[in-house]
Image (cartoon, rainbow, N blue to C red):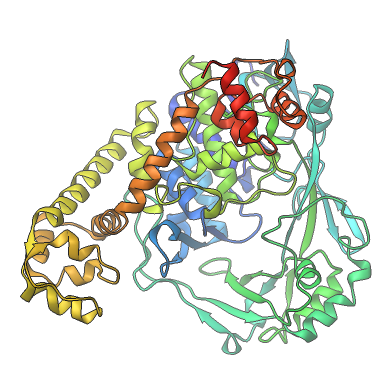
Length: 622
């Protein structure tokens, strides 16, 4: 069946695996995607949504690089929202509500239409390793499949254990068996492993809910989209709803705490800090009488509903009794109860920035196997692992995104440099250059990089160049065109801004707080220029951000340039830190383990002090 050798084998068909397979194949590698169930490629195991705070920026970055997640999200969306619009543009984050079945179907079809991708349904039980180099995989049927590189994207399946109250059983997610064999082999090869936990809420029958008692949560009046390609924005949308728990609900849930695997010691691993279970929220925030619950439809036609905010592993009878006390849920019917799942992961400090493992050559890890949580974080790692696996096989330079180039760069650098002991989730606060890393300019940042390695298509590149040219033309128009007091003062007066007495450049007035592009479009010269050049909303938004936040952007670029100077100071491979007695013991220990590549990376390791960095710089002659 498998007489020929593949370039890349991807193990797992979730968000990380799907992006890894697509990336390697689109770059020209002969790729095999092996997964336990081909019907579940691109499955949304938890909530039926993509994007959100910082996560939306990641989806845009994946799309800008040439990945599929943004396209799939747009094609399966049932609602679109731009979150945080009341804040500055660095915080704006796109989010879609998706049709779960269409999302998975679209992923499957896009992969099937991708040349160089083969598929095989079976469990991978081990790796083929020769002289510390991976040369293929072994399946549960005993079939050996040869390849030059392997990307592991096993999600929550490695020795997965599902908990519902006092019941526990093996599984990678509801209705699917766990994967065994890989963890044990990796540990034998010298890898360090750990356990993590995540959870999911009950799914309920939407026909049994009383939406009239809830608060409607509509999508944006003018919905946008994720992809920079020609996908269509939504013409109509489905509403979500919001309700709240209560003191009564909390009391009913507490009655089951003695049977909760979280509190009776059955679950020992850490769950995601920023997406806690309902019992964890009640326990940690005992002073709060209620918590928000978002009621999210699972698709256009299905009646299945996702109860966001009610993740739980309590016994099913406790879940049911408590949920029936929530406003609007008085007659609720369950499709399935919520559950927690424990699974194996491998601390990501064992990886290089390419996501290749340090111990086994040409073996890459991506997604929850690295200790992350979230579709978007997983997809971005899969994309980068697939790209770098291909580039290494072709003996080309790797693609490593810097912290000032992408949230993806921040994510991978955080994992490799700092590691994680609890499920890692991306936030805007993790990025020190978030004014540079906005959702609106992901294509300007990343498409040229991707195009240079042959990944982003010529069509994508031309579209990006057109956007850059148009937005620069509009910014220059505001810089160079003057406006008379009689024309600009009515606008300034309407936003309670001080009036001007003489003509000045439009740029200056536009830079004032509360003056928006819509205000400037009231000026005849601006309106005519925009119409003549046929600028769309994307160009108007890009120009407005560049003008109003130019000071912040310039400051962050200056700080990023300083960082790059430290990035240029390389640390020799396998450097012996023990000979530098002036380093603190903690610094010697951690840098020996992580083996940072540059001084900049070393400076971000937890426990490494500025004085330790000074010692290193002196030793390196800097």
